[in-house]
Length: 475
Image (cartoon, rainbow, N blue to C red; front, top):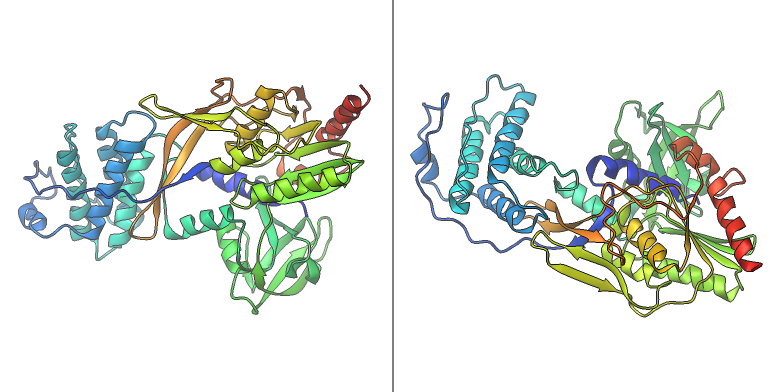
């Protein structure tokens, strides 16, 4: 089982959306509704609408959700928020959504923020209600609400702050919980150059037992050609109710002909760790920081100790992050006491996360990193480096030094908001800077190369880790 598939899928999808992230799990704030008030001039193009009549109706669930999003962003975002940006963002995204749905010359008025929260919220609600009243029959009220919220969040210019649909938040939660779903047991990834969809089966799963091989290209799923589809769409085609059969057309790397494989779906639980003893060293590859990751890493490291490992390698390459608490727990396996990470909100308030006093004495230690090592992975890498409890080997990390919190919404979606930045135990802020390893070993992190080379004789970084540990052992 090669965890790069899972890690790279996460890193690729989340590089567009969130790059994994060090996440807190939050909840929808209990914010009070604002009292109604007079509207500003609606602007050109809306003279035929009776605005007073529109706002004389009780506020809808959509408006309340928009209120909550606005106030939660103003309250929790890690930098001061310009309300005008949020108003402009809503207007821009509503117009873009309407134009995308073939509505010619849609009219959504501009609005001037005053900094008074109740006033600015009413302006947001005005535009959403106007859009729904004028165009809702041609589009969707729910999607207009999602566009309004997404526009506000996108206007902040923070790639990690976003509205997540019910499907997206479910997928994120599933990933962080280690996966538990009806499927066939494969990691999928898309080559950025060729756009081929490649797979790797998880050992022991239906896909593995049916004969699917690492590096196989998926051409079609149940008669649907996957060329041009997004990974999420391919994943939805593959998944299904346990006990049902899915037909895959696949082609092995370099093979001229395709083959069709029938796979019976079953309930899949995806581990986040691959562990094995290599040349006397316990090698542990962690693909993400989920709710089960600490137990999996601890178990693997203790197994290495039980088999008298000469050293330990924690592979965080291509690991896009996950839960902050998991990063603290895993770091504590190697650090006996002291600060693991400090988070700082926009008011300058600092929260210190300390070691959990569960160090297992796994030494000597090497942590492998590359440019897709991000967020929660960088928390662990930074702590290991600051305390000198292990050596970092590989390439400079991604440089994501901010933390997101999740706030559930009444439509089943959620707000993912950057609520703090973090610094390493020595106070290093790695945002946009990354962490330079102690030993730099250049190796292409390109997806195809990663699939074929990680964990093999061609893996120069792994070879360097073993060489380093051998030198330590002979001192």
